[in-house]
Amino acid sequence: MFRVADKIVDEGQKVLLNLKKNPDVDAHEKKTLDDLKKRKKLNIVSNKSYKVSKGKNYAPIKVKLQTALTADMLRNGTWQTEKFKKQNLEALGRDAAGGHLHPLLKVRTQFR
Image (cartoon, rainbow, N blue to C red; front, top):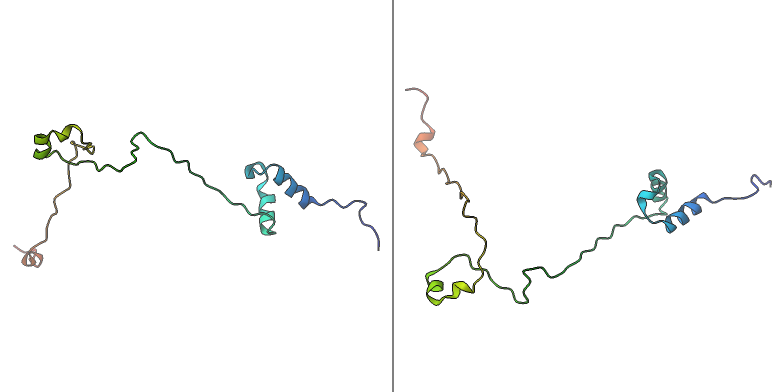
């Protein structure tokens, strides 16, 4: 047996230690990361987190918003304390359906 090299340098270990120091994937070469993925030395996992906080309309009890102003609300005076849904008064509404053709109109000819 003969020595080919005086010192053995493990390049893979250097790359993995470098990844351990700086886990940001964008800071490393794509080629080396792909090579480590193929050799199953690296597995990239993305973690998503959400922050939930109370908004401006938070209420401990869910309040149903009223959709329309009724005559009872006007008589009782409850319209002053009720919360209403926002309404778009400039909306055009749905298009009316065209309906169906009469069966005899479907078979008429082009001749006059």
